[in-house]
Length: 169
Image 1: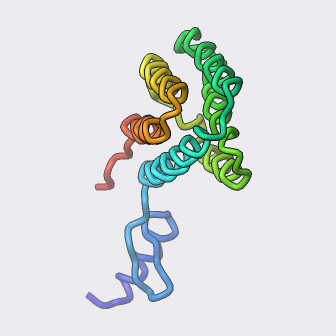
Image 2 (image 1 turned 90 degrees about the vertical axis):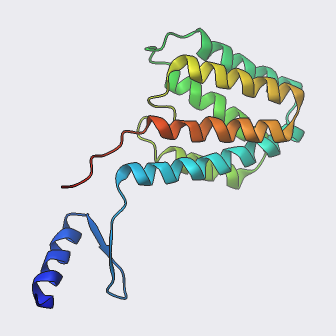
């Protein structure tokens, strides 16, 4: 087979978003949306863990009380309550704000926008409540390592709820 039909096939696959061609004229299979989302979760886990770890030494007792109040509001909701996504966002961002890092807060806002329905989408409500309760306990203990690990596990745990795309025939 000559190079021409292969080149044409690769161009067609690239136009459909299935192949990516780099400047050195090498073609690779494009990442699927679920692969990109998984990568975003991994980045989010690292940044959220950093924010939590920085927040521990800077947060006041009032900060912890506000975070716990947000947790309690979300925990009191039913799983189909329209307020849940917003309460979850407020809970997480209240912790980020305690890190007192404008750049980190900006990056987290940008990253959260990459999740169309929020990073908690698909997670069972009771699991979210249990993990947030664990995080609140770690924050109250002012345990930096426990806070970072709890957040990391919480965010990485969202990956299993990603819709996985079918492989192409």
